[in-house]
Picture 1 (cartoon, rainbow, N blue to C red):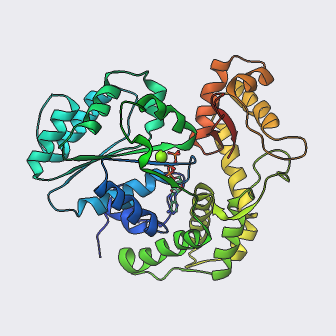
Picture 2: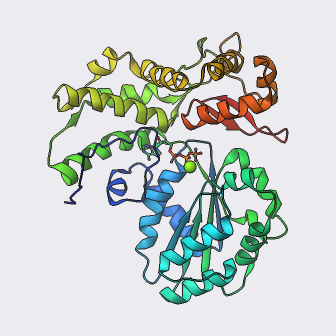
Picture 3: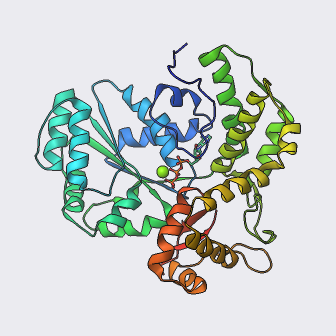
Length: 371
Ligand SMILES: Nc1ncnc2c1ncn2[C@@H]1O[C@H](COP(=O)(O)OP(=O)(O)OP(=O)(O)O)[C@@H](O)[C@H]1O
Ligand SMILES: [Mg+2]
């Protein structure tokens, strides 16, 4: 049993990704197979590309499952890096140094070589949110250094790039500079129903058995209804119904699952209950109402003019017949009669709250749709 200081742990994360902590590693469930595949690839290949839809759970899987598994490899160092706004040559370089406790200031390849020498084995560099690298940087020296490190024969370092699938085409910038770039591509899919079930029941079991010794229960029928309600295409955050969206029971929207369970947990605990109940979910109005309340809160935190922009955008992100439809920022700006530079921060804020997401504009640039 591990001791957790501070406020009592809760088994659910809300919209936050799982972190690389002992607690989150224990609470993270539903991705065993994916973890094995990713770890096997990272161990065997110089470069692995992990991509998937926004919010599908890439960061959580990398931080709470893959990273701890790699740390179990003897004589190896694991470097996780995901802040691309600054100078990544500096930031990643420092992350490499601090992972092995050295100080250097050479090129990426040299730093990796020094780190590998320091541990007497391999360095695994996980570069997450890599789509943000392209957001902040044009082809710069870091891209050259990274490509050089990936190509360097004999260097004991393997790399994983994690990125959203709508940004996948941007990796073309590396094509030609990295041989076999596309040889090792892994797509992370949504949690399927089985994985979704594990993501509800697993954390509660671990909360009970490993973290607290309590005996919180979850009604089996609640689990199935939550999974029904957070399947892709099921939650309706648009103004009109989303009749046209194809429902897919086997594609669980993990952020919605988290929002619903977090809320249920909070309500039951406030009532002193040790059972998560279907009746409570119904009383709260189901996943729709819980997600909608989140939407209202998120909109409420925007400036009044941005709220107007958001409202007009929503009107256009759902067709009159109720299907969701993706639009470019430029077009959304036109609908809202504002500049593109006015809609981008709103899209960004709503993206962070998992209300809209970027999807692949198939060559025509990024489009946004309701989550
Ligand atoms: N296995 C899981 N079980 C339960 N919840 C999960 C799981 N994986 C991810 N989540 C939840 O899904 C949401 C999105 O997770 P995460 O940020 O890891 O996704 P992502 O694919 O990295 O998103 P982005 O594309 O924005 O980087 C979070 O609320 C997280 O807590
Ligand atoms: Mg992520």
